[in-house]
Image (cartoon, rainbow, N blue to C red):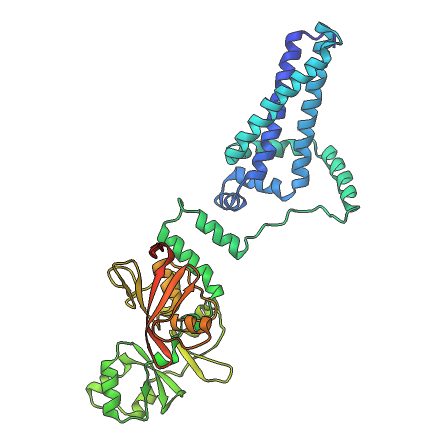
Length: 424
């Protein structure tokens, strides 16, 4: 060592500090990579991404070679610094040299490269992965020994090393990822993706047309009455029942009876001949599953039944699609027709308005658990049929009952808290 020139020692010291910086940056960049983006790049044919993915499958080997190189560089740097201090300044300078080297390593081999790697993980990890991949082959015997000893130590605590498990996003984590990708996904597409994720948490009862609003054809009526109803309807498909809505016998497509009406051949027999068999949906079925069931059964309309087989409501593919893409029919203000905005910032809303549609169109957060309509929500909270003039507060919303009829609310006024006038 005494024969090595000072310039060579300083050059070796600089190289070792750069090596330490390389391994430090490599470690942080590998851990900071977006695994899903990395997997996509590897599938797209990015060679460097494939190498890094292979390294990350065995993090024990990856960390083994990184830490081996990092510690070796730091120890050799410390030894060279000690030699320089002893040769030119004597033993008293060793402490000062150690402090100076610690400061240099901390700044140039730890903080700076690790900060860069955390900010630009791909820029650092891809070229570093290629180098580490080669080093792993060279130093594999030593890395294997180190990893084996470490594995035996961890086994004492019941931990077994192996391939890294592929991390999977939960539903809520995936929702957060979509919501945070604002710059990458247009708002409309973002809302649609969130709508798809919400399908799992929504059942058919939440979006079905209630039993009382189902429009169908009573086949027990005379032909003239049936013809009149068919010509007045705004729907393409109608359930057909015999006297009672619980006695559904089929589903009729209007297009199939236009010719019968034109030729004055519409009667019970011809309707039964052209109608399709009814399709029933058990209550509690998630919308995501029902959408797949519609596709598998090649159906667009189903009747929701309870555990006793009684009809609860009607569901179409359109209702499910509207949960994803929003309402197909809206007024010019983009609000449901059941909502009328007042000059004082309040809203007049009919009692049968669907709460989910109201929240989606108005950006509100009224409770959706249990009740599906505003009328149901109020009666559930009050546990009574309210009278006109009754006021209550639901979350951040002040609500006043304006008009009732029988057991149902006809109209109510909702004042969002931010719009409510301040008390004097």
